[in-house]
Image (cartoon, rainbow, N blue to C red; front, side, top):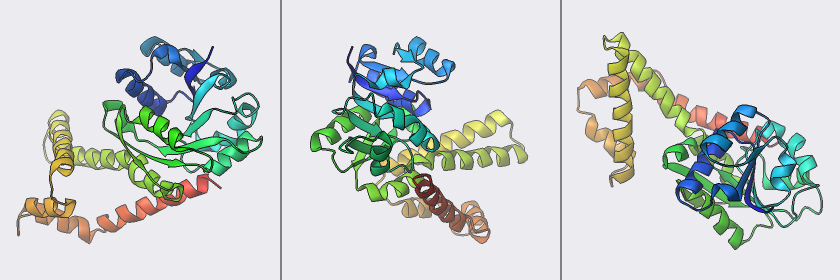
Length: 270
């Protein structure tokens, strides 16, 4: 049986992608097959999504037109080397692995290295239809391959195309980005409790504030800097908070953290 999409690694990100394509009716559950070593993940795909799920990755890729590589980058060589022997040489390979270049993927798969590969970096807001995905063509990927990749991700995300050399920056800013905002909201909730709010009150205030601010960023013609300025009255509470952050090096720490994330992405590809 031929599948339109064979997934290697049925983790959270693969789940978000599948929920998107199923919700937008890009594919049906019968057109997808997923493989994962964890029984819990296979059960979730089968029971919640209706997608057949197997333990053996070779079964998921042998007859798939598009193969989605959704495995930990540290496992790339170990997982891909045996798959290259059974995978359809005409398959389109879409990778969401951080740091692993299309050239490295082709090398791990072996053969004549003519694999058509599109490297991508999605993020977890795809789970709620608000994802951001960058896609970059490998050496042999065609315009049709990019269009097919777009079709998968646009079901639950905005897609941009760029050069593969920029993917480490994308990983740092967008792929890992949701975690930075979650960390900020965590600390807002913590401070709220320390200031006398209940945990429930602090959670509601922080999360709704973050959601509203994100909407303003998306829909306002103003830059982030201008939006911040409009909230910051001279001598007011916001200015006091921001001056404290600046004095403690928060802006510099954030930029340094993103540089480190990009560096780690490069290290994973070594």
